Length: 604
Image 1 (spheres, rainbow, N blue to C red):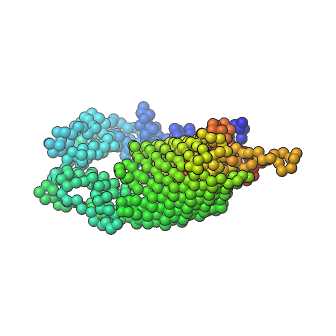
Image 2: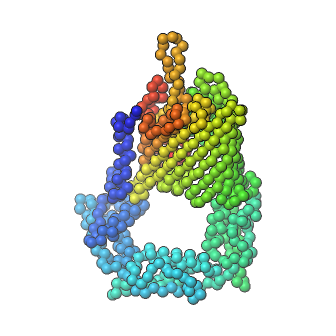
Image 3: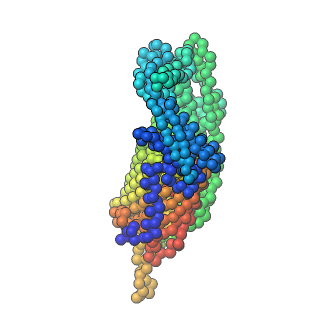
């Protein structure tokens, strides 16, 4: 059994990663102070701890983004500037008589804040047409509430939303006026709705189309002649057009009203539909690799995408094509068809395969997607020391994915859960039947209030194959561990069960084969990610994993690897460079002392 405490290097890496966890709830000023050129500060507000913490948080946020502060070298200059900021912040919370005094001692600034009385709303009126005001619920503020700027501006948004959903106004223009009465520590608040005619939609036109099917885009608008006119509906229609990925730009023009009707014209700029891609990458276990691809995102005029990609490295070569049909019979459904030819030359097996398949995916909710499909795989697999075997595997993958992350290639918050059940049947009549189950979970937590925005990322993967014995499963369908997407520090597919090889000479001990793959898989990865600048970042990581001959994955008997990396943030995704070290070496297996990985996107 291998236990985490048996590896001192592992303990050091864990200690470095876990040191961020307390930082997510402590004072931001305590994070990585040796990188901070600005003087330390304290804020003191007597008898109001909540206001004191809020003012402190706001100053920290300003320090992260203010270019003016970065130009100051004298702490006195910093103190004068931030005193003005604190006074503005007090007024935004209703403290119009607030005073701030600053002192600088040994390069540290102390701000003493006397907020004074909070100003409250004495009267609240809404200037709106009577027939609209009658159905208006409330603005969210009432008389005697504190005059908080954020709440006041939220009220503007509430009124604008109400008018956009319940009125046909040509223009929605909402403003407010707050009159402060210092003698009473109060204010009069008035919301003003500018006068505008109520109109309906007349003719709807589109200009600028060349290759996109016009009827297809009209359905995306969800605006019909005779509808109640709404600027919010126009904004939503523009967003839906952009989300087709066929339009690079769109704006709308509204005609002058005539007899209560306005015509709407959408001016579109079509996106370039064809893309050619070239890429390079490197890993220690697979060597240098190149890729080339071609994509057309509007092959049939309704957003259908076809993609062809070739990838070549020292151990695997593949050619893959995919057709994606969005809004397949339903707006929340898509269909994809794939075909791939591949050749793999691994240490434990060689495999040539041709795979064709199709999948229907349906977005059940904003974060939940279901998919069902079928796949046919023709393959010839030769294991180390065995004769080659041919397979005709038919499978029916079923999957569910829950995704609440904020970014596909560089997530900083949220989580994902992906579960796939994939039954296999060999059409050759060999009786080969098995079910491959995989579960992958990831989670991301970012301390945005801490210097350098540290992100703690966690990934857990488990897999089980049931139905037949391990060696009866095709070698290229078994589970393996190790590599850039698994346990960094170990070569690709270098971890897992191994067979005893009989000796050539009597009396010699048997030897162990290369990993043969298994029916069970366990993996866990932990990353701590920094962002030093807008374009540069760093990573510390710890990976553990193993595969097993029996379909009972365990998180006790794992091999561990640790390392660090550099990230360069491009406009598309991070470019990553990782170096990883194995913390334990499998017996009689040459895996090298480190592994290097260069690719696009985070490891997970």
